[in-house]
Image (tube, rainbow, N blue to C red; front, side):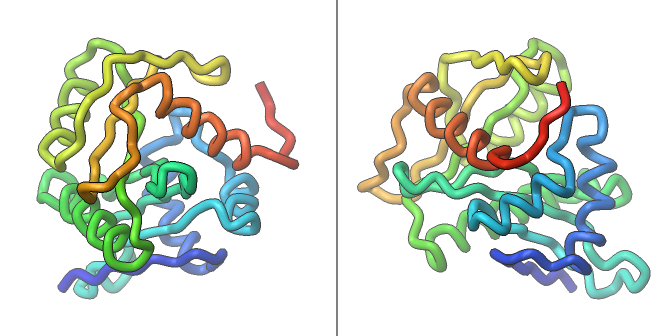
Length: 192
C-alpha cells in the first residue's frame, strides 16, 4: 500500500530515508548538499514529498521530491524527484508527480508547476522530457546554461488552472527559477 507525505519543515528522520534515494539519483549531477537543503527549509523555500510503501519494512520511503516555492507565479518548481532504483519503471514517478499536482491544487492552491530538465540531445534526456510531457508538462524553446553545472537545461511547465500566470517563455521562467536557486544558496558557502 502506497502512502504520500509532504512536509514543510525539517524532519531529520524523514530526510535520512529520502536522502538515500536523493544521493542515488543525483550524486553525479551536482546536487544541493544537506546543509543547503536544511537552509531551504529554515527559510521556508521548499517542501519534501515522499512515497512510502508500507510493505517495505527496512526502507519504506521509495520515492522523494523537493518542490520549491515560486510565489510570483503562484506555482511550485519540482526541484528534484527520484524513485529508488529498485522501484523504477513501475509508474511510481508519474504517481508522485500526480500526487504533487493534486497537492499543489488542493492544499497550496497553486496555479501551476514548473520543472527544469537537462536539454543535451541524448536518449536519456529525450526519455526524461517524454516522461514530463506524459505528466502534462509543456516544453519551452529556451535552453539555459548555468555557470555552476555543465549541462544545459530547459524549463517545462504545466498550468493547473484557467487563470494561471505561468508564462510559456523559457527566459521568463528561468528568471523565477534563478531567483529561487539564489535564495536556496543565500548564506551558504558554495564550492566551485
